[in-house]
Figure 1: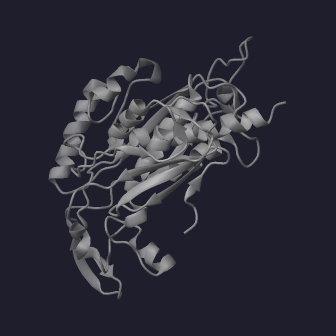
Figure 2: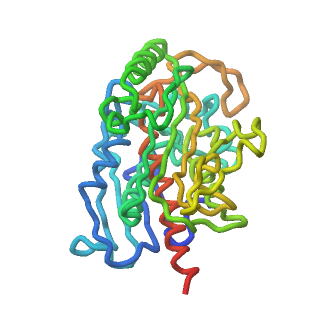
Length: 354
């Protein structure tokens, strides 16, 4: 299987399956001498882990990260950083009923077609369980980036959307509610809706917005490795993501150039920021902001018609522990992937200057 690594200089390779013994990863290219805050890494893991509230899957995983190499006496050594996250709460029997059945909108059919077999226990390698490795590596990347601040939050659940502008939002509210929405009133509305959807055995999607501040100008490569292109690749690699837009996004397509151009101030900043902090594929020093669309979780606690591996029509219903809405737990994953992109470009920028 190819495609298990992400990054050029700051590179993450992950391994493991949802219901195997463990998942883990190797971070290559992290500079030596970086002080590692283990408590901060665990806090990031706790934001993503299952079982943290009544509106997410109730699988109980401590998601404790065990570092195996690359860190000595609290600092990175410059060698590959290996880490392990044990799967402590597997319930493989919850998936025995789909051993020969293809779940609608899952990777079951495509894995069988590509590899000739599949790990049906929670989707194996295709499970969002793999994203725990990304959060661990992203936490290391955040520490490398120091002053750069990456903040993601829930902007929509189904048709319930934030109505406030970015300047009106209070980011201190994000971690005060299980939906991770910076508007307390909307957060309560979203939480109630997710609970209703769950009681119906259904699921719902949503939108995550992310804002990156204190980004220096000059990050990104201007042709195939544009900063926004790599951010798009990073976000679209996350399970259940169906769309990515940055800056003015699709709204910009309805504007005139005279409305959309970001005019300069004397200090090099711009009066508006329709560019979303990126011009010509390179950061310009303004805030970077983007939106990520997540589909409804494919596993439903309702009966659905599907086919088995022999092509026979069968009826199936989801079992076990699943998220009715993936968006609240996706917040730290979006931040982690953004951090991996920026850490990579940060190191690439250093090598491009004498």
